[in-house]
Amino acid sequence: MNVTLHLGLPNSHRKTAALLYWEAFGGKLGRVMGPEAKALAYLERVIQADHVIIALEGEAMIGMAGFKTPNGAFADGGWKDMRQIYGTIGTIWRLGLLALLNREVDNHRFLVDGICVSHNYRGHGVGAALVQALCAEAAARGYSIVRLEVIDTNLRARKLYERLGFTVLRRDELGILRHAFGFASATTMIRELDQTDGAD
Image (cartoon, rainbow, N blue to C red; front, side, top):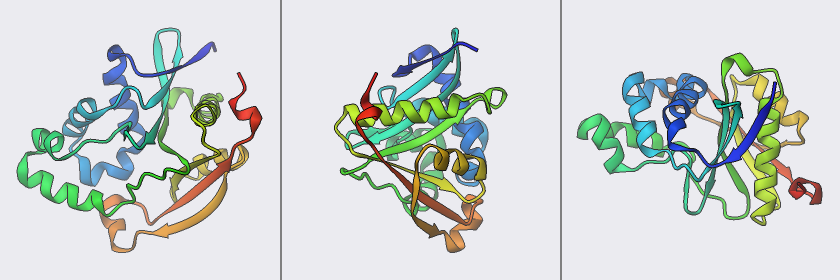
């Protein structure tokens, strides 16, 4: 398997990126952002192409890793974007619920905004390569720590992050919100970077 990583998302892969994101996070966001057709339309509309690293096998996009900066995030829309897809009423309650999730931008740590690998390519090192690329990008931007969050039902991802040097910072319980989002808790993990992370 010949996989290459690239910073930035070409327009030709925008639809695939929305599908990959929904495949990875639809279980977490489906009750709030569904139905699927509207969620995909929303994602295609709001994706910030300069806030992602993509994995390609040949011309096929097989994975991606989004990130947040003070200038935005990979999948980060606002009122106008959501209203265009969901209408006024649908936007009001969706934004209300999403606002209760942690959406902070941490200026001291490089924040990950979702890592997705196509189902058929999981277990082949694509996710690990994307995480390492995120760490290199963080180091190149002058960050010393990378931060991500993993939900309690995604044990496979947590094991990967632990293997790649991430440690637990804290665990947040959702309480009653678990009924809306389909998971009970989220664990914040960090990895301190060193000189090798920024090396080519």
